[in-house]
Image (cartoon, rainbow, N blue to C red; front, side, top):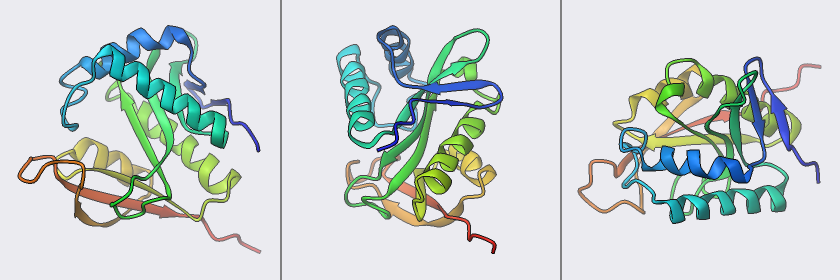
Length: 183
């Protein structure tokens, strides 16, 4: 199994998680504006448990949701990477490209830059046939990132883990397929 511990982009280092990431990640997860398209913010314990699950995925698969660090400054700004699509949604069992960034990192192209690198790992290095991305229908900023990545609108669905009637239950899913090799 190849372990994709670090990936460098023009401005970012995508890497495995460090203990020093836990406090800023907990602050990011507790920010209501960052988490406005999720059912709830996360407390420190829940945030730490998420890091533990992310790291286990790396240990099991060799890739996952990389911690994002700005090159030069070393500033932790969130995560971007690949994660299994949950049961009950279109693409369940395949990989999803996802991201979550601190507000100070928004509108700088970091999500798109890092997600492109994650798609390269998934499609070109791992040979995955398709990668998905999903979000609440009202999350137009993330949908804009999906479109910049060349992902194609696949459909709408109600997220099974979000209660009926909740504004975040209607979801959209985008997908991108492995490019055809040119002989």
